[in-house]
Structure formats: structure tokens, C-alpha cells
Length: 148
Image: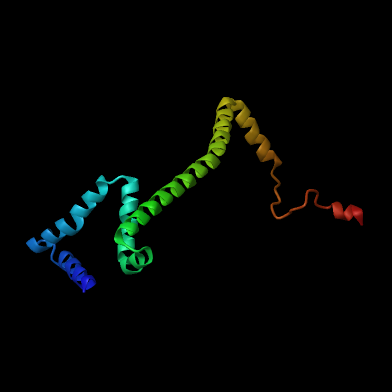
């Protein structure tokens, strides 16, 4: 029933956006919740999402934990755990990226330190090392004739 009512409200807001009813519904069902969520901190937003999920499964969770107070305490513990896990993943990723950034920074500094002549000679040398025959993957084509 609730899903049907929410679907009807979304249909009214989508098909008749200029009516006072649609503006009222949009204000109370979209603008106010978004403004409330934008004022929340990361951990409070995570707590709200986990609590909403637990309330959707309220019969099973309350039956498993014994009371609504224990369910809210459990959601807070789960929020702290998820927040600590996310921070651990972020710090672990930053620790892996830091040496890569230092290596890239040193390569850029070395590249900028070389003069234009050195770069030109590297380009000329790289062009002279290229083979005209790109289909051949042998270092010395025709060496097999000498071996025979």
C-alpha cells in the first residue's frame, strides 16, 4: 500500500509539475529530505542508512536482538565498524599510491631538467632504431640462411 501511494505521488509530481499539489509533494518528499541529508556528517549519514535498512527488516532484527533499543545500539556499532573499515581502505589505498606519485614526480623533474638538445637526440636515436620492416620480428633477418 505504501509503495502504491509513493508511486502515485511520483506520478503526480512527474505528470503535473505545475500544480500546487505536485509542488507541495516535491517540497516535502524531495527538497526537505535532501536538505536534511546535506547537513549530516559522514558517520551520521551512514547511521541513517543502516538504521533505515534495519527498520525495513524490523521484525526480524528486533526478534533477533530482543528490543528496539538493542537494534539501535547494534546499528550504531555497525556504523562505527563500517566507518572504520572505509577509512582503513582509503588509508591503505593512499599508502599504495604515494610511492607511485613520488616516482612519477621524479620522472617529470628529470624530464624537465634535460635540455631540448638531449630530447631531440633521444628522438633521433629512437627513430633510427626503428626497423623499416615492421612485419619481421627477428633481430637479424637472413641469419637462418647462414646457418643452413
